Length: 273
Length: 273
Image (cartoon, rainbow over all chains, first blue to last red; front, side, top):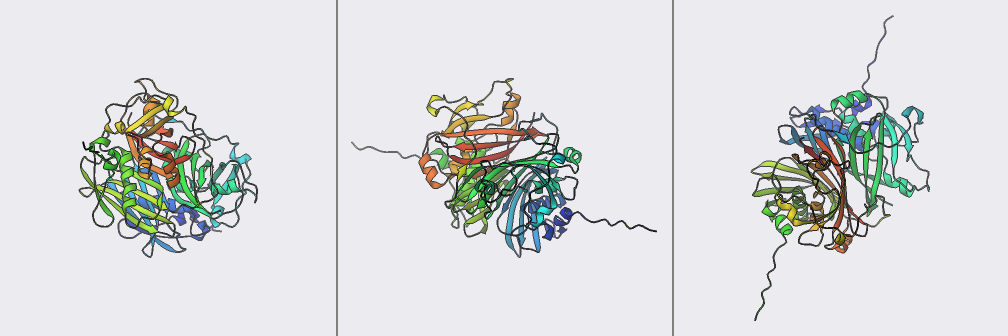
C-alpha cells in the first residue's frame, strides 16, 4: 500500500504570502484565519510588510526596526503592498512602505534593515518572572476572534477579565507561540509583538472599542537566536503607561525561555469608553 | 529719549522655520545653533517634521505619534521637507514625511495627528524621584556640541561619565528645558525627546561613535497641559534595554514638574565599540 503525505502550508505562511508585481509592489490578500473584529489582525499586517521587504530584490540584511501605522481598515480581499528602499547605506537600509486597496491607503510604514556585527552586548531589561510554559494552562482567550486560534496563549498574569473586574495594573505576561507551532522567523516575531489585547480593557474591566493606530518594533534577535528559539513559546509581556484623551500607549518585550530578548515593541492605540 | 525694543527670534523657532513651496513641500535649512557631530541635532530634525505638518493647510488636530528614521546625515545648508497626508479619517490623519537634499533622502518619517476628546484617563507609569530643578546644578554637558548650548540640563542621575567610569545602569534622569526658556509646544517637546546622549556610553564608560537611527514619540500632552507647563523644566528619563550587534534601544519618558506625563519615546541607535 502506498502512503500519501499531504504537505499543507502553515496558515501564517499563507497569510503573509505575496506575489511580486513590478519591482517594489506585491499583491497580497487577507485570509479568514487571521481575521480580527474589523479587517485582519494587525500583527499579520505588520508581518506582511516585513515579508515584502525580504522579498524585494534589493533587500539588505535583516530587520532592525519597523513602524506600522494602521491608517484605515483593510477590507477582506486583495491588497497591494509597495516597498521602496528610500535610502541604502553600506550596512543599513531605510524602507518606506504602504498597503493600498483600490488606490486608497490603508497602512503606512517605515522599516530599517541592516547587517548586524558583533559588539559589546548586554541586556539591561529584566525578563518577567514566569513558571515554565508547560505548567501554565492555555487561555482564556476571546472565542469570537478568528486570529486568536492561530496562537497558543498561556497567561501568567493579566488574562482576559470578567466584566466589572477592573485591574489595578495593565500588565499582561504570557507564553505565546504560533498554533500549530512553527519555527520563529522575523515575520512571525513581528506578528507576535501585536498579540496583546487592548490594555485599557484590563484597567476599566469591560470590552470597549479599541485598536492599534501605530506599532513600533525593535528587533534584537539575530538569525542564530531565531534558529535556537525554534518553535518554543515566547515569553511576552506588555504594560500600558498613559491612558487618556481617547488613546493609550503600551511597552512590550518578547523573551526566549532562557532569557534572551528577542524584540521590544511599543504601540499607540485608540479607545472609546 | 526713545527706547528701542529689539525682538529677537528664539534659536529654536529659527531652526524649525519653514518656507512653503508648492502644497506639501517646504524649504528649510540647518542653523549653526543646533549643529551636532555630523549634521543637525536629531531632535531639531524631528521637530521640523512636526512643524511641517502643522503648517500644511490640511493639518487635522495635534500630534499623537511620530516616527523619524535618520537615514543619512543632513549636510549644513538648505533642505526640502515633503509632508503628504496619506489618509485623513474623521478624527485622525496619517502623514508620510521625508527630508531630502538635492533629491537624496536624508530622513523618512510617519506621523499621526488627530483630535483628542475626553475619556477615562490614568497614568500607570511612575515619574522618577527627583529633587526640585532649582536645587540641581546644571551640567555636566559636552562642550564640543553646539546644540547642547540651547538646553539647560540638570542631571539628577546618569550625567556624563569620566573615561573608564562604566556604569551598571544606563538610566539618565534630568531636568531639561530650552535655553533661553521658551513656552513648551509640540515641536519643542518633540526635540526634547532626543536630548539623551547615547546610553551605551554610560555603560561602557567611554566616548564611542553612536547615533539615533529611529525615534518614536507618543504625545500624551494636550494643548492645556502644554500651556500649563509654560517654560518650566521637564523631568526627562531614559533607560537602555538591549545593547548588542551594533545597536541598542532606549525607552524615555518626559514629565511635568507636578507629575503629568507629556510624552513617551523610544529609539534605536547604532554604536561602534
